Image (cartoon, rainbow, N blue to C red; front, side, top):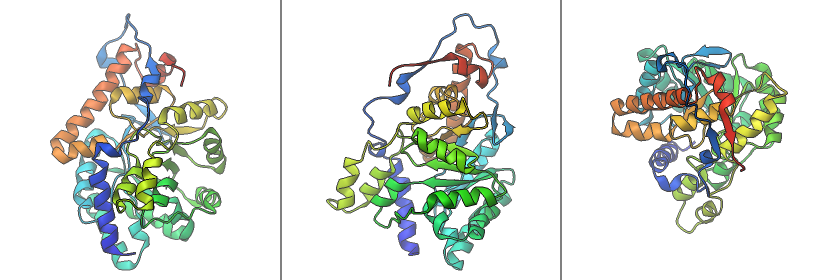
Length: 351
């Protein structure tokens, strides 16, 4: 691995993720297709509203988590420490950025391990979710993959699927053959839950069911609607290059978060143990409420969190508080004391 190339790529990702031009160019506001029924005759106090949700078979205070963003470069330790401190204060899970660097030669791996050691030392109670791409899962021994969980003392391991990003990335590794078998083997041998997530392109109903049958614990649909990694990689490529031009063609490629959640909810009717999360274009607490009404047990936010942190750590906490406050308002004004009751307040428009 070229360390300078790696560092530059990760810095590019942060800079370009903050650019609104790299948000998915969907033709409609997907969340406008989902309505929650207003309850005029609310028969509870706002103080009674609970945000608790069962995540990874554990009762948690809130359904929110920070989606995986960045790791393994000179600026990431400071960013991740700030995120970790905020997550502990708010009892949120935190997805770590790709741990690909830890799978490289010893000097690079040690530096990346050190990042999480320092964060753990200062924020020992942080609930981390380890993270690696499926192409790295395929190409590395299972024991090496397990070490990613150990290095972060993670509650689960995320395997991210990013075919569009890899095929448009100038340094990409679009090598996904045997991904199904690799995921199945991991599920059988890993002691912590395996979470499969997309990176902005969502899931078809068939793929959701296939992953469930492989033994995956959770699927984070991460659908079209938020940061578009195809556009980001196209923006990184040389102007006029194949990748640069093709990224514009595929600027709306994918399955929306809403559609992915609808299909997941249909599967759950027959598979009661099926757990799925929502991320991809969730900008506020009302979006989160709609995702939870569609059956998600957890809701991931990334770009809005990163934008808030660019201002200050205080603004980061303000944003997290606002997300939870807006979700509580949605529950209260729907006449719901908790998230489970919210599922009876769903009104879907034709999509």
